[in-house]
Amino acid sequence: MLEISTIKCLTDNYSYLIRDKETNLVGVIDPSEFTPVDRTIAESYKKLDFILNTHHHFDHVGGNKKLKEKYSCKIAASKIDESRIPGIDIKLKEGDFFNFGKINFKVIFIPGHTKGHIAFYSKSEKIIFTGDTLFSLGCGRIFEGTYKQMFESLNKIKSLPTSTKIYCGHEYTKKNLQFCMKYENNNNFLRKKLNWVNSQLDKKKPTIPISLGEELKTNIFLRCNELSLKNALGMNNASDEVIFKKLRDLKDQF
Ligand code: ZN
Ligand code: FE
Image 1: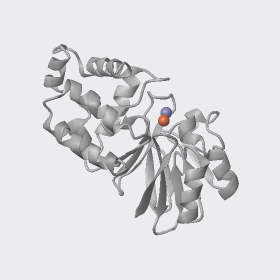
Image 2: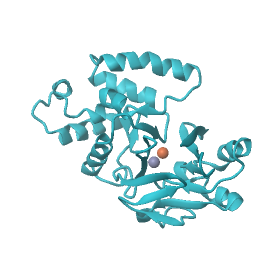
Image 3: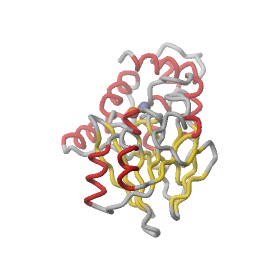
Image 4: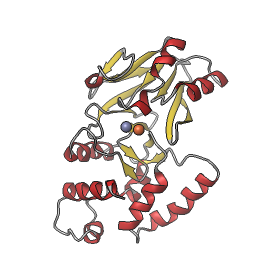
């Protein structure tokens, strides 16, 4: 069993501290910066065995070097990004398993936001760390990859069990929700979600994690096959992938 704590970093980033209860291994996913992560470790487990990075952007690896210096932890990340991940030790690719004590994280290659982006998925824990690929009610910008890659990466995540909890890299839910509402204003799940998101944020609480099942009902980027959405865009006959590209472009300007 895993213990997971959410650490707020920078302006809207989340890093996640994880501990395998059986072996007492401690890891952190995407340490944006040293100080808040170090403080959380000091208040809790007082050690760090692994850093897991989803991709190379500074707001996901910013704490790598100092944490490694202080805790002598090992850093696991995408092989494709080996030259861009500070301090990388363990190089991962699609289908690899990263054994974290008794937990087996499957590495899922999800390019699009960056060329080497990966997710860490545990079937037994029903969790996935999606970095900047899938957010609650949104998806990442396409910086290095193609629309097709991003669309396929999201489809890979979509195929996981609906009970899977999604832990993503940013608190973007409210802005994402406003975008989803613009094109699916009749979606009752979204309307309900608005109140919940506002109340979480008012209490200074994260809107993360969120289940994949919930996202499938509300995240417009996972709903490109919906006829009502195609209608709202005036693109009834367009393929799901074309709808995705359209939405991604609209979101970039939103
Ligand atoms: Zn990023
Ligand atoms: Fe990011």
